[in-house]
Length: 387
Ligand code: SF4
Image (cartoon, rainbow, N blue to C red; front, side, top):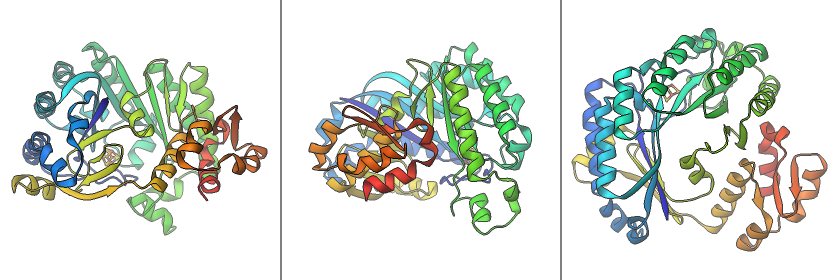
């Protein structure tokens, strides 16, 4: 069985206004102890399985084929730390790495780092581009500017990292449909193998989200596009990326043929993965567990010889059904009714006609999926089908 490993590096240079992740700005001297703690957690993983009642045999006989450094800003830390963590994985698991991804912010990329990343086995870089418009970047608190993307991408190509993914965000302050089109056109010109496009999330977890909820104007909240404008920009992205030869395979993800993210597909297909580091989640097919979010607490627990786990839950059949529905519909491949219905004793077919009649769901034989042009309003469908 194939296994994915996720490593969380929860450090950033500053906090972007829209960010709702558990990441922190800490002094660089905290990076080395954190990387050591991650290596210890990997080496001592069997004590967790024993404590949690997770059968270790299946995990231990799996082959790790994907590794993903996410954050935070993993490209911020010394590449030697990343290399040591990869060595710990190699020393603890049977490895046949097909895809080793590093999330990177464009301004952190140097030739020296890129050479070290490639030598350590990193073969894919996921760039937090977010926009090619400097006003949008600046008003969101991003550290990089448009020209950093143009500087960084060729550095990676030159050292042999030929699988690049670019993230864009729809809904940044000051974004218009014209500026969004310009960002998409520039992105397409740079020919990344993979593209992720996220809609701005408005919730209590970010400074901008709180400002929008309270109808304030700080953090350029008044310049955030409306929901309708965002939906139009999303549909524009679909058209431009499709014309440029990208396959839309998940609600937020497009890839050139053969470049869909092998690691992220594991999450969407509910396949097993292990996460190490502060706040990292793991799933073995039946049980989920998650580490403490606070990096100091995480390092403290590892140093004290304790498990850093904060949550552990056995996934119920109802949860599995909901997850499979939610994740399946987010993928353009859709859900196979002949497999889903008997597996979960669910009568989905009878809920479909009203959704089909208003064009929210497409059905071909035993396959259903969200209508591609309605993906930006997918929540309505989830509510109907899960109800
Ligand atoms: S770089 Fe990414 S993780 Fe860090 S604060 Fe910005 S959005 Fe959040």
